[in-house]
Every structure is written in C-alpha cells, then in structure tokens.
Amino acid sequence: MSPVSTLITNIGELSTQDYARGDQAAVLRDAAVVFEGERISWIGAARDAPAADAVVDAGGRAGLPGWVDSHTHLAFAGDRGAEFEARMAGQSYAAGGIAVTTEATRAASDYDLTRLLLARAAEAAAGGTTYLETKTGYGLSLEEERRHARIASTVADQVTFLGAHLVPDGADAEDYTDLVCTDMLAAVLPYVQWADVFCEKGAFTEEQSRRVLRACRDAGLGLRVHGNQLGHGAGVRLAVEFGAASVDHVNYLSDDDVAALAGTWSGRDPGAGAGEFGSEDSGPGTPGTVATCLPACDLSTRAPLADARRLLDAGVPVALASNCNPGTSYTSSMNFCVATAVLQMGLTVQEAVRAATFGGALALRRHTGKDRNGQRAVGSLAVGHRADLQLLNAPSAAHLAYRPGMPLTGSVWKAGVQVRR
Image 1: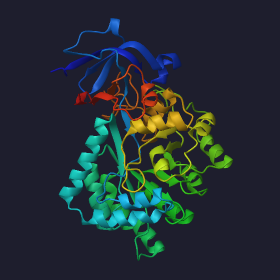
Image 2: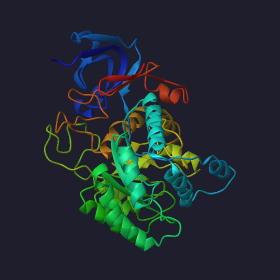
Image 3: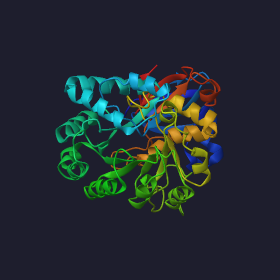
Image 4: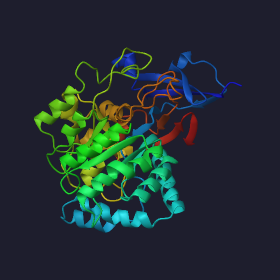
C-alpha cells in the first residue's frame, strides 16, 4: 500500500537550504511541498502542486527545514541555577562545575533519566527541532557512561560518547584517560556514533585529548572536539589533525586556526547542497571540519561570541547549536540561537537559518542520503530528503530576528509526522 501523501501549500516563503538548486532557488515564494510517508516527494510552486491525500493550507506563513541541533547534553539530572546566578554576579566560568551535575545524574534512576530526556527532546521538537544529537559525559565511570549512552540512544537521533568531559574528583588524570580509551569506550560502542573530548584547561590536555581521539577513531567512531572555548588552545589543531566532523565552541581563534579549518575545505564548496560530498548525486569527496558556534552558551557564560562571520568569510561552514545543558546553556531554543546569530554575530537571516539546519546536518554527516542505506538527508528540503518541515507564525524567516523571543514556531513535521500543530 502506498504511503499517505500530504500537500502543504500556500507557503509564502520557503527556505529550502537546498543550494544544489542555485542560490536564487534556495528561497521559494508561493511554494508547496508534498510528503509521501517520511520523505519529500515534490517541491515547487504552489500553482503546480500535484494532488495529495491530505491538504494543509499554510496561509502564507514561512516554511523552513526543521532545526538540526548538533550539540546538546540532554542526559542529566539536577539543577545549577545557583551557579548561574553566581556567574551573573561576576564569578567566572570554569569546567569544574560539571562535577555537580555528575553527582545528581548518577543518582537518577533509569526511569527518571529517560523521563527527563524525553521531556527535553519534546521541548526541542516544540521549538522546531526535528533532528538532534546528544552526548554522554555526566556519568564519568564505566557503568554510568554505558547507562547514559544506552538511555540516550532511545531518545536522540545520534549519540556522542563524551567520557572525556572531565576527570572525576579523586581520579588520576592519566589513569582516567586510559579508562576512557579502553574499557569505557568498549562499553558504550553499541550505543554511540561519535566521540568527543573537552580539550581545555581544567579538563583534558592536548596529549590526553589526542589519545582519546586516536582510540575512538580506531574503534570506528566519528570524531568531534570541544575546543577553544575558554581560551586559545589545541582544540582546533586536533580537530583538523584527526579529520573531526566538527570543532565546537570556537570562541578563541587565531589566524592559524581559521586557516587550518578553511584548509580542510580546500577544493570543496562549503555552500553546496545535499548533492555534494560523495552522495549518489555527485562525485567523490569528503567534508572538512565544521565550526559549531553555541551562542546561548556564550551569553550564559559571558564569553566573547564565536566569530561566525570571520569563519564564513574564510570559507569555513558554520553550524549553530543550542548546547542545551544544565550549567552553561539551559535552553534548546534554536530560534534564540538564530536570532542571536543575526543580531549579535553578523550573520544574515539566511546564513543563520542555514547554519541551524544544513550546517548542523553537515556537522552530523546527515546532509546527504536519498534513500541511501535507509537514511534520508536532513537539514534541507528537496525531493528524497526526510520530510522535516516547520511553519512559522510569520510571513518570513526574518521575523526570527525581527521579533526576537516571540513564540514563532507554528506547525512542525518530523519524518512526515506532525509533532506540533
């Protein structure tokens, strides 16, 4: 039996982020989209739309891909509001606050941790997020990291192993790094797709981070790096050295760091759509390292905002993500991140939307795939891609920054299923 088809028509402005159509076609006017089951089967002018089993009139509202949130820490329990209040009163942020959350999360039952994860994922979906990654990193022991990875894998679209988040209180840093690279890594492998390391003063040194990345790469995991958040450091260098899919935070960048990231994209078009980088629509190629900016975290820690404008101008693709976590960015609002990127980081509306959709998909390597290995591309709207779409209660995406903080998320579809009306 054929899947049910749904026509969403009378979309006043549709930001497809499918740059394979050409820059002018990335934003369509008076548009329509047809879903068949979980895939997009047609996209174009509303006047040319085919018949479908069901019809939704968008009423001239703006449409865009669902947000792809490529950096979150949703597997946690407890509250760090007092720490936030102290920081707002002038106390500087340091990595050690993670230990507070570790204690509370270890004490949470499987049921309670699952319930918390589901609630946070539902909040994100209500805000237009249709694809999200989350990390471990609040367990910091073999059994707890495995437990958190297992639970997270039942909720998030992709899970990242972050055993190298912080050295637990009382542990020897070298011994703990060895544990992360061996038994802990083996324990989480059935549940995770990625590995990450917090390469910062107060967390893991350059050499410890290199050991973690090497072990996780050899185990077959994709790589990401928390880097250059608290000051200049080795994070970007390591991400480039190991071919990481992304380096996240990037608040402090030297000219050499920017040049190194740009070099990973040499000969590639970071503005290309889902037909690039070795999909069935193009020739061979491998994406470089995406710079993931986390503006909500920057504001919460009163850090300098990541220089997304400088990165884009250098040819480095940028992703925007929420970094939802209890200590430094307790929000999953991608609308807020997009507004901040436009109002304070120098991005245009479409650059910010692209970073929060296609950029996140690129950082998670889900920017391609039309029925390939059962996977469909997310982060852009094109035939064969997953049917992830949001309608705003506004005539254009510009209202995300023009009316910051307003509840503009209207209807949301994830894999063809309406998850918010």
